[in-house]
Amino acid sequence: MILDPVLDLFRGKAVTIPPLDGAFRPNTRLDDAPAFAELTEPDNLLVSGERVLASSGNAIYSLAARTEPKIVETFPSAVTALALSPSGELTVGLESGKLLISGKEVPLPAALSCITALAYADDGTLWLANGSAERAPSQWAADLMRKGASGSLWRRDAAGGGFRKVSGDIAFPYGLYSVGRDVLVSESWRHQLVRFDGATGNRSTVLTHLPGYPARLSPSADGGAWLTLFAPRNRLIEFVLQEKHYRQDMLSQVPPAYWIAPALASSRSFLEPLQCGGIRTMGIHKPWSPSRSYGLVVRLDQDMQPQFSLHSRANGTRHGICSVAERDGILFIASRGGDCVLAVDLASGGF
Image (cartoon, rainbow, N blue to C red; front, side, top):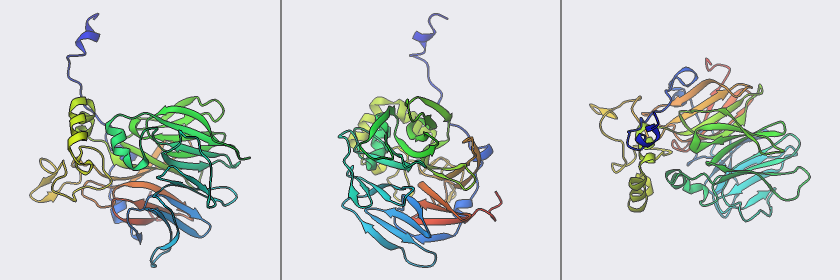
């Protein structure tokens, strides 16, 4: 009908989210996995030779089984991204917006101030994801609730020199994976993976309608990739994102920890939203209940399609998965919400 576009303004909109089914079928593999190391809010993971490196706050730690994490290096602000060059140079992004390669600061354009991910191509090209032009990496929740889409993708040639902007208008790029001359980007607020042409910046959607907010990507041994999703989508949050005035009041009047927004951990305070109704019944936290936090790691094949996944459900504790790293058949998983790094034996995991 001719009046349909006008009538749409007055019609209610259904709030739907993709189901956890197929390759995303729920399980308890993350909660069943042994803790490789205890570490406060581990964020980035990196395999460097025989070492497993993890960032926590403003420090990088070396991890080993049955031993305490050892500090490798500390920085003036929190570590937000890690990468290792083909020649072995440790590359570190900081909350302050600084980029360090082998301990030396690299000059950056003024527009680069929110480093969320780094990745090297085989030829030494360095890819950099700038999560937001307006906020720091730690302010990701505010960027989502204000519907930010000011993220951008940058590259630095293997020969050195400055960074060149490849593309903009990305809704919080949080993960990078180099594919030949191109790069795969996890676009968190649009719940999808996007492939960018390294020469032209042209984009094409590879995987969409994800059931959560995608974070970092890392290579798997057989040419596929691992994708982490740091929080789930749920109907209440999706509804709040549609209510402009409610969101504005919430952002201005409520402390960030108690926003109706995704979280890296939940059920830690009685002031948090989402605690009644179908969450608990007779004192039992239901694993299928809606939650602001979750633990989810997805295995992607060489075509970047989901094969299987590892979960920590609503009643679990290994939530807030932002990074994984594979080495010799072992998958290391950093749980920011669970304050630990897990180790999953892929050969005996029944995948």
